[in-house]
Length: 526
Image (cartoon, rainbow, N blue to C red; front, side):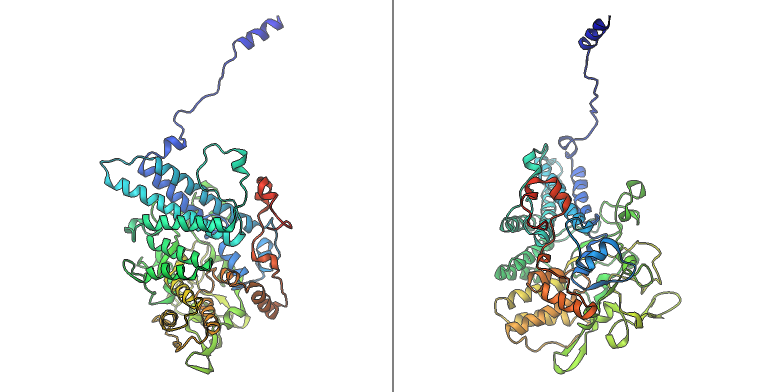
């Protein structure tokens, strides 16, 4: 009897699994303009993931570039960054790697599916959108690889969408740095050809042709292709581009959602916060481990709350960064001069040039900064001019990725690195210094190439303090170890920067998941 039941059971066996015919696949979802646009927006969303601009990116590179130093509330893995005491299991090192590759993965999907998609001939805008979507994702993919190659060196080069990855796909080896740079260059050339110069208000914040030009010029500069950088960056000073310096320096680091929404003429590419394009406003606590039920989208930066002296106050601006704003007057070298950008960058005392009041637009009126005797605090990317404290990590201040002043200084550097210290690079540097709200004394000469580079380096430090630029500048100039160790020795008695720190360690998670990468890591670092 038992055998008969077994035979019956075997004979009647059927596949009872159900196929959800309404489920989306890569073949059925990306079949409309609307769906492809959603996928492009999801690619931008990677910029706001943990390890990137909504949270951690500013900590990581302000601390490593020694623009910021830890205050007592800062602990754990972030304190390790501040002390250059981290390894392959560092959270931020792994989160940044993961977020950048997520941008790449999403971009690969869009680029692949958008090329398969057939726009409706009766809707001419769809063909234009198809070109734009592909170009946007090539820009974002190039941005991700730009960061990866600068931070980690040789990394796996994942160039296309794979429906069913094989073990060989998963265990992709690290590509030579030259191959990664070549891929970045081609993506940006394609993006430059396919992106519009401007967008409608409804799409403000998306990558423009100018963003692609700027990142390509920056890539050439980092590769030491000075002439190519000069050619590319010069485009941004001419028609059809209309970029100019913001008349008020701190307008770049204020909350556009609390003002009249006027678009800043200096912004070339920024990470948008709060409502933009197809996004609503996400929950402010999303980046602290929130789930979709908390809001589903990270559309706030937490920097204002985390850096703010009246809020969490996790970091100070370094004394080294503050002192850089006092230097010999370019027109009277025997006298020291305090650069006016100090008052837009940090709170301090009058002697330092820092801002000495806050709450200028509060109903209670201006309040004297109360902590001048305890150290210097961040003003840039804060809006204590409007509120006494934030009450939550809900800053709508957009993250400046590339702005026109940065471009002008990179363009000046491209001339100087070719031995030209004459009128053109001098004019570019003075253009940045002569912004109406700054009006710093102009240089009359840049001197020798060595002198000119010293001036250029200082200008970049002052103009871009707290914008996650200095770390990358020191690394590419080959002076990170000597500079960081000298500054930290003076300020806290340590010299933590080691030779290996010119690159990040390959994250432990990647090593564990990718056998080809694991075999290619030297000294458990890179």
